Length: 213
Image (cartoon, rainbow, N blue to C red; front, side, top):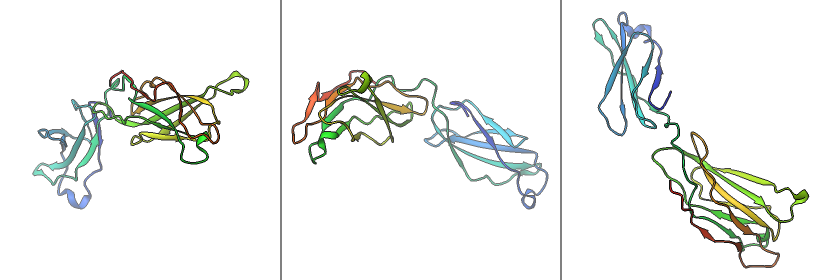
């Protein structure tokens, strides 16, 4: 399967339903969202549907013919074509915010990260990747970067198990069926000290990424 084609294969009609020699098969297909029905004929049990629209849901049905005419159509098969190569995000998710949690006594080890959920008609959003790097108290002068993969319905994540009163760089990007989009500009945030209730945020609380989708 490609963005503009689908390969379709099927089994023979059962012996007790052939009522003669099968001379050809007819495939009928159309876009589920609405388009005229097209058809192709095949003498083997394999056919290629071409000239299709990318990332589009199609309904496909088939029927067999003897020399006396055609039989009933099969149940419809629903298939979505692939997206076009290169139809991936050109910018990161917008409005990346980092808020230090203050609800419980473990707020000094947690940061809550939120962003705008991404929607698109040109590519399928498969999820998000959040990346965060510790900036303070680094052993051996090496910053460890952690990554979390989240489902496409996500617009926030709670980072826990962090070091107290420590700065982190945090960014997010969208994942598609083709490949990853670019990371947002990093937001720098700091976890609380023990016993502190204020939010410790270095930089803008609501950084608006100016790149567009």
